[in-house]
Structure formats: structure tokens, C-alpha cells
Length: 424
Image (cartoon, rainbow, N blue to C red; front, side, top):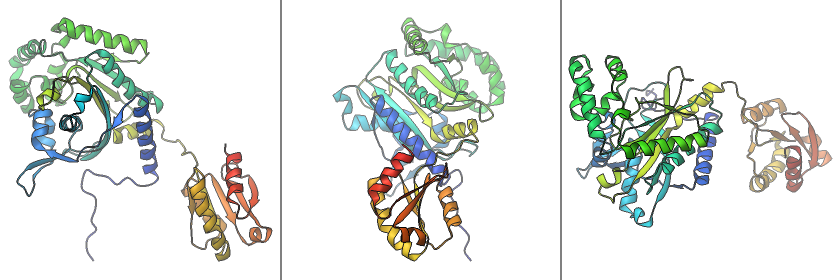
């Protein structure tokens, strides 16, 4: 007997009924993004490795440690998509979208990172994100944060917290770089090997370290506030004013720098402690120089990415005993004659009512059929047996209230009308 083949480590199969949660989340994402005026973009799952080296940054953990990179049969170096922003910007440049003016784009789909699998972190994960391009002002920053917060609010995730920071621009960041080097250099031997290397190449990455050896020094590091230029300060103050006016709660957290090199000015995260420790479910910010660095025009941009796995884990942890809403109709035929009469009716109902219609084709007793209806989470059972055939009727049972209603056998319009009346 051959050995069983299993899913690769760090991946998961999404099966019913959990897949219903995914469908609901994806439906809400498409609906919400549309309300904010965003259009969906889809890019290839693999790109030239150079795109991420230039776009994400060669000193980032993603590029240095986490990318799935391979050489294809044409001797080209390719990488499975580890994040979405660089591919979206590449596509916009390639297809000359920026010539049409500001763009509002969103995406939903998988990313791939080779890292140690743990709770809420997979080697194949899924993200929802938006990219708003063409606007330099804080109003665009507010828009994307508001969109992310609306999704969180819509799910009732009261534990979520918006954390906000600014990391300046090309004018004030060099001053901050020098301030960080002055702070960390006397303690170089105390830093982790990764942070020792980052201090020379990109000191901001040290602030992103989760290594216990670095945390105390990171906590006492100078903040951007001390070196911020007037333009960046005004941008950040205006963003905070928008959030205050919209009554979106937030905290300013100087430790947030995000893990990618392309960020400028605004950076933010949405976190939760419902999973046992503070966990980031959404992160983003402004990246005004990214398009130019990829060979495109000088176009400002701001956006975010939200992890679907971690978002659903937060939701399920906050509402562990929630009941799925019953929806749909279970057609139940008791016997071969009933089945022959019910199958055509089910076919008509599937084309005429806005609910799923389930049917099991095996000979079972009524109780067994009703158990299948419960497993399908159906709201109604449409029952046909020998007694019903003799009476020329069907029994339509509400599986929540256990109330029965009789409708004319074979009349799909009567069934549809009764369903509308029983569960308007």
C-alpha cells in the first residue's frame, strides 16, 4: 500500500463548513472595496525576482530569508509572489495605467513565504489589500485606513486597535538614520546578529526586530518625532485630525516602521490580543517612491494588506460559540417514486430562487435526511413521500421553528412563494 500524500508543510486545505466563512469574508471584501470606489486587479503568482529585490528591498526579511525563488527552464530567476504591492505597481507601469490619472486598485489572493509555520502564519497565506495612487495628501491615507477599519468594524472585532506612526521622507529620514546609529552603535555587541548587520545597511530594520536581545534597546531608541521635518509633521497632524473627526480610535506607536523598504511618512497596523498575544492582522502605509524605483513615473501611493487567515482567526476567537445562519432548502424524497417527481422540481427551484437547494439521492429514512439538512445548515426541508403524493402536496418545513406548510405538488411557483412568506 502506497503512503498517503499530504498537503505541504505550512499550507492548509480550506474545507466546508469553514469555506463558508471564507466566502462570506471575500464577498464582504468585494462589496466594501466597491463602495469605496476600488477596482480589482489580478497579477501572476510568480514574477521576476528582481521586482521584489528592487521593490521590497534587499535588506528586508522577505527578500533575504522568505522568498520561494527558482530558475525556470529559460534560465530566468523567478519568485512566487511574497507580497502584492510591487506586482500591482509593476502591472500598472507595464499597462500605462498611471497615464489615466489616479488609480484605486484592490486585490484578494495568495502570497508565498518560506518561514516557520505557526498559529496564523502559513507558507501559503491569503491577503486582501488596496493601493491608492496619485494623491500625496493625508486624505488618501485616511481613505485606506478608513476602508480597513470599516471591514474590522463590520465584523464586530472590538478588540482590534489601530496603531499609527510616521517615518518621515527623504528630507528627515537621513537625520533619523544618524540618530539610530548613534543610539545602537555603543551597544553593538548586545544586538542580535541580524540587527548588527542591519545597523550598517538599514538601521530602521532594527526597530522591526522581535529578537529578545534587541527589544530593550529598541524601546529606548529615539523616535521620529525628534527629527521630523515640518512637511511630514503637518501631513501626520492632518491625518490624525481626519481620524479624530471620523471617530476612528488609534494610538501613536513610535515602534511601528513596517518591514518593507518602500514606506515613507504614514505607517500603520491593526492589531489584536484576542489570539493570546498582540498580533498584527493588517498593515500598510505610504510609499511615494516605489513606482519611480520600479521604472515608472513619480506617482505617490498609499495602501494596506490584511491577512485573511489571521482575520478569521480573530473573528472566531472573539465569537467562538456563534451559530451559522441557516440558509437554503433541503429537498427530501422518501422513496424512488418521490425522488423521480422531486428531481425536476429541484432543477426548477435552483434556477428560480435565490437560495441553495440541496438534495440527497440515496434511500434514507426521514430522520437521516433531516440530519443531512442540519449538516448543510439548511433553513427549510421540502418533503415528499407516499402520503404527500397521494394528497398531491409537498410539506415545506421550517427547520428553525419546526412549523409545516403544505404546497401544491409540482408547482415551483407555489414553493417559491411559500419560502418568501415563511422567511421574508
